[in-house]
Structure formats: structure tokens, C-alpha cells
Image 1 (tube, rainbow, N blue to C red):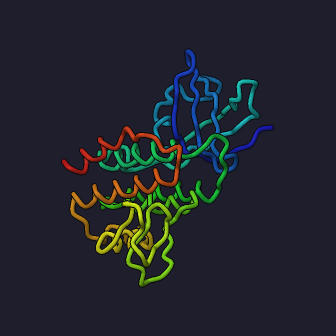
Image 2: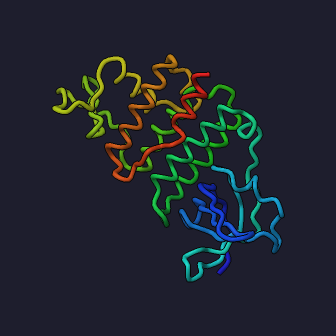
Image 3: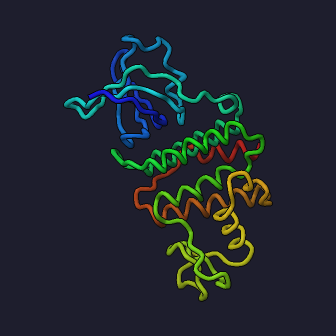
Length: 239
């Protein structure tokens, strides 16, 4: 059965001559691997459609014996106007793509998560200031992964990273926040994407908060692996 859907490209791997396996988080079917062949109605130059986090539109055909779905009539669904040409935005996209790709399992379906990704990418593409976007994105991503930070009591003096909640007593382990960093953490959890860049951070503070968020992910996701694009992102924000 053939169905049309939108999707967000996660990864592309050369399979055989003029064939690729492309992993796409789709609106209708979740994360799937598709076999793409040049020709057959596809444009000869598919490179622009294979970039991380590109939003595409295509027809999907039921999977073959190798577990690969057939992909037909691949096209750009929402062209980006600035991300491909802005080095900082491009590095942010590369980094966030790697995080999401490494933390979503095959066949995982979540239409709300798909729309969050799509809308966030469109916002980034049209936004001028992007200094805090990646921090806001990762914090909000935890909503869909099931460990969004919970503020139990406004008077609680600590945030327990391991438990994902505020606490009135100092946790017995070292993974907690208090004082200014607890306040900043809560601001990012509660802010909208349009307000995130109003949160004041130095360059060093931005790096530190990113380390805290990545630690938070590792504490709650066993499958969280090394993020190779992290150093590239740091260099871009330090230049």
C-alpha cells in the first residue's frame, strides 16, 4: 500500500551504486529506513534532500524482505532560507540532529514530536538570534521523552537532575542544581522559543548549561552515546 507523508531526514547511507538508505522520522509512520534509487522520477541530484533535518515529502511503499521501505517521488516539503547558508545555524542543526537520531529508536512513532521538530526547525530558519536556541530545544525535547523537569514546590531550593524534580533537601548525590543555575534551568524549562534568547548567559555559561543538559539526558537515557558534533558546535559559538 502506498501512502504519502512528510518526514524529517535523520541520516543517509550509501547502499549500492545509485542507491541509498535514508532514515526519516515521518509524520505518519515514525522512524523508518527507506531505500532510494536515482532515476524513476527522482531528480538526478538528490544531495540537497539528504542533508540532516531537511523536511521532505514523499510516497512510502510497504517494506521489502530486508526491512527497507520503498520511497518514491521524494521532494522538498519546506525549503530552508537561512540554515544552509548560516554557519552557526548549520552547526546547531547538525548537533541537534545527532542528538535526536541517537535517542529515537527504529519504528518509534510520535506525531506530536514530529510536529515539535518541524515547527522548531522553521522557527530556527527564520530567527535572527540563535544563541540559546539549542538549549531551549533540548530542554523542550525532554517533554516528548518523558523526563521534562518538574517543579514540585516553588520554594524548593534544589533541582535533582537524577530524579528530574525539585527538592527541598539537598540530594545525596552530586547531580543537582541550586541558586542561580537552578533559576536559569527553570527559566529555560518554562520559556517559549521566542523568549529563550532573552535569558542572559555568557559564552562560558552557555557551554556550562549545555553540559548540564547533556548530563541530564545521560542520567535518563541509557542509550545516550557520545555526541561527535558537540565540539564543532562549541567552536562555532566560541569564534
